[in-house]
Image 1: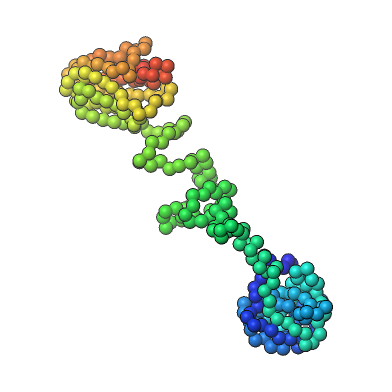
Image 2: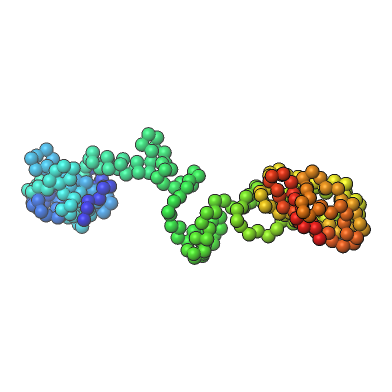
Length: 281
């Protein structure tokens, strides 16, 4: 059993004598008066035979009546050794350099020695953004007064997730299956598709020729990204495609189908930086 690093002070003005002699192997000491020795149930640092050749620093682990418990591991502390003490030997509570230094060493495990502020490289606080690695959370609660009940297997599926998707930011996913983002509008002579937000664009009840079909890009699509355009006209309507579209082996259609739906499939071509027509039905 090792001695405690952090030790209590046994009480203010705690000073008396031994009423029974003790040997250097004894684990208790009976004192004449226990006045002021009761702080922390008698736990605290004591000095025996002060100023003599048998001076000894020891630590009382507890008190029962007028008897202090002095485990052998707590005798002869701070460079000294356990000594025999005669009846009438002095014993008093003390605060030692070792106690103080041990306290400072312990505090600097969580506080910065230079300022006394919390050292966020060692402990988690409530205000600093911190990254925790290899920490196990038992029944964690996240912005909700309900315990998380996911299994370890289910939580492991989140490996690699670095942020939650929000409605106010643009998020990029790689190799994830996501339902197509569909945009719709009713009849426009100059429709503009924001291909950052839509994978499919439906233009219904088209009542006029399309004089300019364009896309609005705030970012460059990735190679192989697809776009599907569906147009339903009230009659055959001419279509003029903008500069961001191109024909390949499949020609971009120039008219809609009378009262039927026209579907145009396109793939982003990073070489020409255009949406290439690959299907027209």
